[in-house]
Image (cartoon, rainbow, N blue to C red):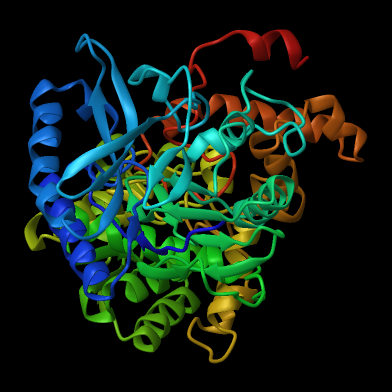
Length: 549
């Protein structure tokens, strides 16, 4: 690089569709960069609209609003350049591009359209956008900028064993002699992804011997969590700047300065916890809610969710309700109330025994408990109805405590414990939930230790234990991870030493529960294989009948 430039990375948290609010944040950032005498500010992918805008892109009024809102930003680039992500129509007005605009002097001086459109898992960009046919560098103040948008850098043959696209965009840009690579991203987080990103960006900067600026969105949008973690790598492949994780940040990069290599942040269980906290906080605040409600059972899952909610929203904004039946133990009552005291959240007890008796009196001729699934499930549904009553009356958003292991095999009750506006730990396997609880207790006993060590039970019948209906979680969870998250074939799972009949039984439970998963609340996605918007399995199909004999 012969020229020097001061570049700021605006790692910020947009609200999808809040064009006015996003524009005001953009303008504030541009003012800050100008005051600090920076030349260029790089924003994340679709920074104006927020990512992903999904079917808002099918509304003509939304597209017109994007255009007019952009015009409000232009005057604020009189003395500082910006690369802003937005949507633009093509020349004939019938197609749409995911674009990065280079703006300076109050006008657009360059444009790059996204070339590689992801159409897998949670991504549906081919539904909305046209791909760019060609790429080229943009000139700005003596530097040639090789600008790409998110997926454009996720197709290098040295990194990806199975390539989804026929083009290598960085190779194409390299032939146009860039001085620096810049990538605008809205890359959703899942555990392990950041380590992969670091290796990928290091490889690119070494391969091309060109510095690499990576600007990523942060925040929670519906089911997705974006970790930020924007980075700068020097031409030798060394990480020299790293943004905050799960927080907004403003990162300053001066191309004239020789930066020392910094230590690379390593992912651990705290990343999952912080992702859950951020996803919960943004889901509430971006939908206009500040107060949360959940049922406290005295068990591990509701304890974990209560801790996350208290951290995300403040303990004064969380209500936990213990709803005992004839099967609830004194141990569970003490654990639930002890957790509430430890967290400082509001706590109530509402017994369900009389309501349960009314159901038994209506449906059983002798008004005596007969046992069976219907009587178990009605207790969960009574609790769900009571919680929804409180939610409506007190304007508190209800959180479902269901974990991924339960959701996978259908070990939850529709309109009962699955009630809620969001399933905070719906992408957390039970074994990982234990790990998160131990993380929360790493310095002090916030969650009563008895909750962590006692045998899991739904307490819907006498002496009930989860393992009466399910394999031990130490066996169930690895099979679920292999089948759901890693797409490992059934026979390969069995070859790893798992009992054939048990594997078939688990897979059958997974398939039978698909209709339940369609009715589960939105799930915060933190794995590569979450239930929710990225899963598109049919409810009714015959494949299992031909395979599972």
